[in-house]
Length: 359
Image 1: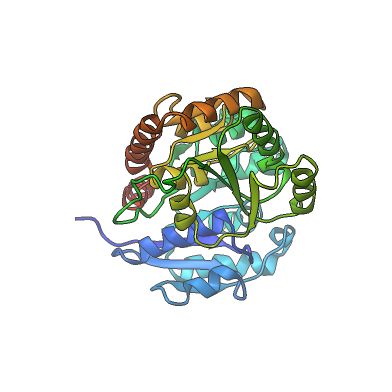
Image 2: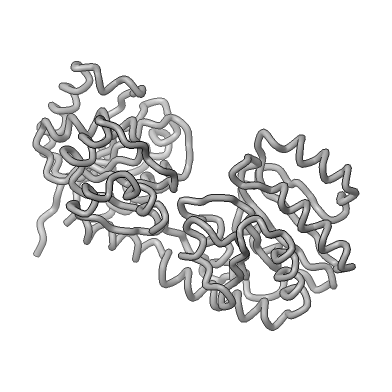
């Protein structure tokens, strides 16, 4: 019988994002086990607010990119780790790893875990080399693509460490949507994400133009807000696509949004983990995205959706046309998408992988 352990999550980011969501859900699950759960976070940030109702012991601190140079902060963290007999500490971003990781090393914490959740290359530097080689004991990646990009400059170090790929977890509804939400000829195509360059929703305007030329009945709903909202709105109007594309702004209830659509598409030009693709899969929707980053890990081409050659809007439009004209294919791919999501993203399974990894 395994004994309980003292496990600490460390994330001082004041706002709410994907990494904060993962940290919160992991700590929530951990607090329901025999393990004693701690959390170092910004006392006035979004994480602290959400953690108030959990059986989690908070240690509020503020941190900047240069906090790791502050010996007072380092020593206070060393005392915190030692005073609470912390055996495992889990980080999510470089800023916190520099501060809390070095303190954990000094305090003799057994497991110092760095979860990497963004698929961008990490530049070679003396500080990163020190952190990865001398401080971190375990690496968690949210996709193979994310792991490969860190290994680009640090493979000789990563191969000496304990590593795991643990996909983001998703809560599954008791009764997922199975019926076609649109009993009329118009097919609803959904996209969700921040209106930023990475998500590249301008490709959706090109795709809509091509679908319109094919005289297809469709509407594209884009859920999300961001700095490119005005630019996208102007382009939609200029190309006379107002009847075919609707910018919904920020959408809080994503499961409800997924229930409204027939097909989900992503035009992002890179992803660490396509969380929104997984959410569409849970809702039994076929998914389409460019063949890059982590997308091939989620989309099995021709089975639960389609992988599109990078930035090729002609093929993208052709594949959407194929799905628009074949209700049985949409349903078959949606069912396969759900089965894949259930096997790879279900919350309890993903949390158990985390437990197994740090034990």
